[in-house]
Image (cartoon, rainbow, N blue to C red; front, side, top):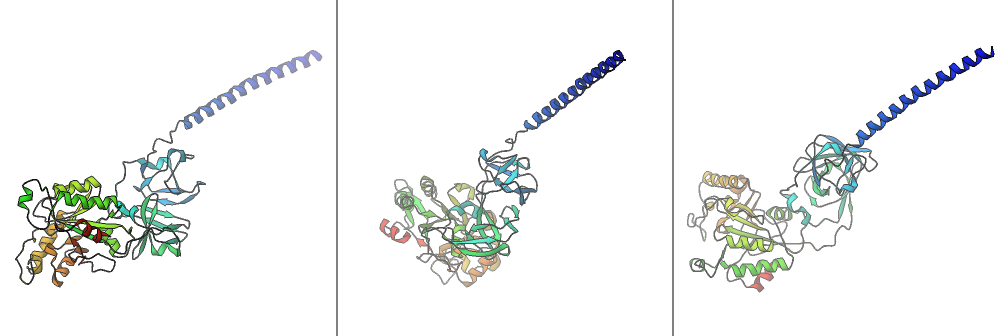
Amino acid sequence: MKLGLKIIITLLCVLVGFSVIFFGKNLLNNKKSSSKNKSKDNKVDITANYNDYVVATTDTDIYNKKLKKVGKISKDAKILLDDKKSIKDKYYKLKNADIYIKYDKVAKSDAFTYENEYKTYKNYIVYNENIKTKDNYKLLNVDNTLYEINNSDTYNVIIKDEDKYGIEFNDQLFYIKNEDVESNVENTNSDTAIAKDIAVLNYHYTIDETSDEGKECKQTICMTQTQVDEEIKYLKDNQFYPVTMQDLYLFLTGKIQLPEKSVAITIDDGWYLARMIAILEKYQMQGTLYLIGSLASPNDYNSQYLEIHSHTWDLHTPNVCKGSHHGGGLLCLDEQVILDDLKKSRESLNNTEVLCYPFYEYNARTVELVKKAGFKMALAGGYKKAKPGDNMYAIPRFELGNYTTINEFINIVN
């Protein structure tokens, strides 16, 4: 009996031992498998899609710092990311915003280029006013980027348009429609002096006085490169902001605030332009050429410091019409002739909406035809500063010439 009991106990011990060994091996294998899978997960490189510039590859959710969903972003949206230290649990942080996006929902991109307001809005002076959004609102820009955000936020106002506000988000300019704004609040966002008016300067020909150009160009609008250089250098040394025509339009329509020291540099026609372009590039100052379209291709004047708008296609001919000093064709030619010319000029210049009248001449009929042709702003003469509220089809400019002294120039721009 005792012997039998011992045998039974021994067999039970053997069975228990085998069970421990068997289940132990399975447990060890499971742990190894789990560890292997975990190791495989850890091999996912969440920095793979990281770049300063990325685009959303699909319509996707966005999150707050607690990784709670706070809205959505549209496919192809341009996004600027914070530095790599902001990578958190497979999410990237947007630059200058407490918003996160999943690392596998974006793709690397080249640096973004912006046009219109996007190009220069960082030079605008923010209003001393904030807007508070509703709990659900949308952010839009001209590239059709759309954020739908599900919590109220407060933003500084950069642009005041008729039906929307321009604000900065993710280091970019976005718009919030009036219908998504809960309230407006006064706030001290800036104490920078703002412009009340702007001198729009008008140059024509910049010549090399030591060459044959000095003998050929005898008009008062033929200025030497020495004189022009001195004037543009003054603007640069005294930290004037050289506005684009989009800046000027937004300023004159009361939609933005510009620095007190702002100026517009315009050049008419297209002759003798190489030296002016070289001076603009030397001092990194923005200028605007009003090109006679039949004279040359805009491609002949490529420079990052020069934008080009219309001076008509081929209506810069004097003594065509009676009743004015120069008699440019805009004053009296057949309506369809004028509209065809302006259409051709616009199409050659990426459908520009800005025109400069030949010889500064216009009448009521001219203005109506210029509007009909699709222009939103036209520049003339007048020898006074431009200010908000001015007629947008008679923007005044200061004509400069070889008779303009540096002291006169300083008085004009200040």
